[in-house]
Length: 109
Image (cartoon, rainbow, N blue to C red; front, side, top):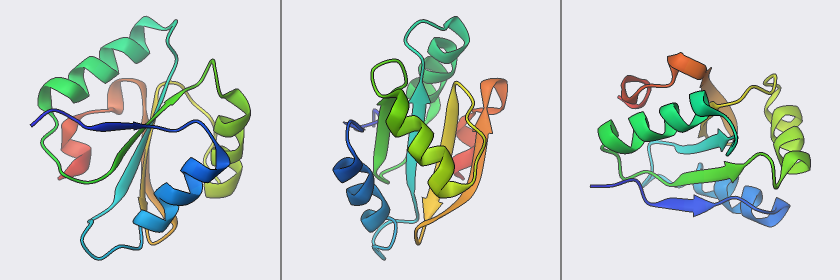
């Protein structure tokens, strides 16, 4: 099953994602922060889309278009901004994050 990305474009979208992280039907919610100009980011995204098999809510943030939202996410979850970056959120807390070549489907098992 391909990743069903939901766009993360506003504070309201972020609040929805955080709310979903409390839902007992989800193991977690994850956010992929992507730079559309970066080949490493493109590679990480392609690798996830080829190998990831999860049903959890998946959010996609275009860093170039929504840099302020990316900064808010870094602040809110006390995670230094990197690109590309994946954050796994459970019960409103970032339980795991990874960047660059550490972004693999194994993070989600």
